[in-house]
Length: 65
Image (cartoon, rainbow, N blue to C red):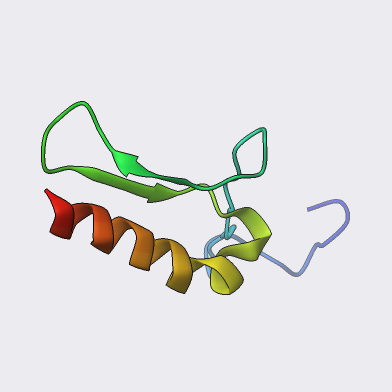
C-alpha cells in the first residue's frame, strides 16, 4: 500500500511463474522409485529449449520398460 496505493490484491491476484532448476543445472529425467512414474523437471530458464529433447529421453525410457 505504501509504494502502490492504487493496487489492491482484492482485484489483482499476485502470481509468480517459478522455474525450478537443479543445483547442477541438469534437468531430472528418470524413473522414480515407484515403477511407472517418471520425472521430467528442473529445466529452469531453459525449459522451452530443453523440454522437447528431454521429453524424448523420458519417452524412450518408458518404451524400453
